[in-house]
Picture 1: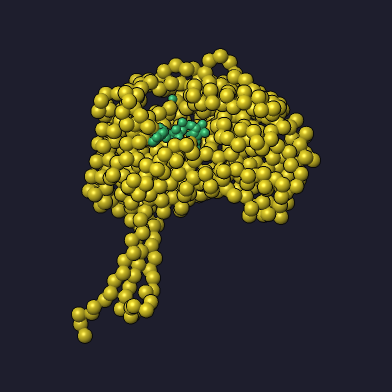
Picture 2: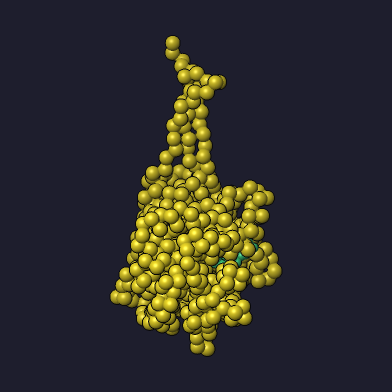
Length: 511
Ligand code: NAI
Ligand code: MG
């Protein structure tokens, strides 16, 4: 696996009664205006962990008003150095609570504690520190104005200004990390935020509200809402949709399904909101015959089974060269058996937890059924694991043809589809023959092969001899239907700024 597992980290006892479960608005935890709440389910046990407040249109209105007041008032006077210190402080507070936050994430989402404590939360901390560092390094440029209309009395420069109130809508697969990817750059440049958490996983996001207040962010700078997307449970406008429709929200950032991405784009057209979208994928993981086979098998496991396969960049189309095909399948089958330990996400030996919800579990099981009906051959897995909790066995299909739905649609579960190839151009054509373009990977020891493929793969990231390597420094986002824009690294700062061009003519008073 690509991160070193520290198994000394303790799982913490969570006192559910003391967790924040209300909406975080203006630095206070408050009930939803209409008093709505909904049950939050533990996917490993199917039991209800607790009820959380459910935001609707009225709550979004209050949150946006708070964010607007903060943007126009106190937050506009907080300079880059102070924003940097606040973000750094937030990272410190998360680090002090690392094992607690990781336990909470695993409880709510079902991901194994070894992943939340070694990957999710450390990446959250790095993300906030990265953008703490970026806050006081924003620069515009100075330009020579020298066209046909001007003389030498002009000076011009650009300013990168915060867009204003931004709406951020995130999914459940990396709840806290998606919050960090969104909040980090927005706060670094001086925006204020209304963040809507995924309905399935509200707990770490609401807890983050507590830490944000503790770090010293002024009221209204960050508002965090639990609740649904399109409709509330009593039939009203959902918190997600209310954000999209609010005229005082000037930018929306979304991670989730391509289906909802399309809705979001249409809604944002009404008020020309700036928009970044991080959507689905069906990413190719390509293994050449000269690859380090043990590493490639390891990488294939990570690419598809990490986080129960609930990863937008999952290597869900695995291409294996014919010369090593049989050996690869053999080694993959053994490794999957050895490596994927299904069970209680809070047990330190567990490497695979349940799918996040009944809905996702059903979706994955339906695709497995479909794969069998379509004539693909299941070489391992293919069934539910146990009788309680949304556990699905690690599963792999071979003889997958490119007109099969399991080859073309995002399954978002621990289901790998494997195809054989013989030439580089054949595999390149197949790899790019998709409406998606989020990620890709190539396994080879040959620099020429790596370079040839890297230039021609139509995807936002190309991993070479690795997979799903994340870092605040690495830009992430999709070509084609996988999204619009890039998150992380310096690129994310542009998502939250407007360019203001200043052009000044001098009229000297003294002759
Ligand atoms: P989704 O796209 O419905 O939900 C993502 C977020 O959007 C949630 O916060 C949800 O409340 C919100 N939302 C939903 N409908 C909305 C609307 N009309 N207006 C505003 N906000 C709205 O994803 P869902 O249903 O949880 O998962 C379905 C599939 O989406 C998965 O099986 C997977 O294929 C894909 N997905 C992709 C993710 C990624 O990382 N790119 C993450 C999660 C899901
Ligand atoms: Mg939950």
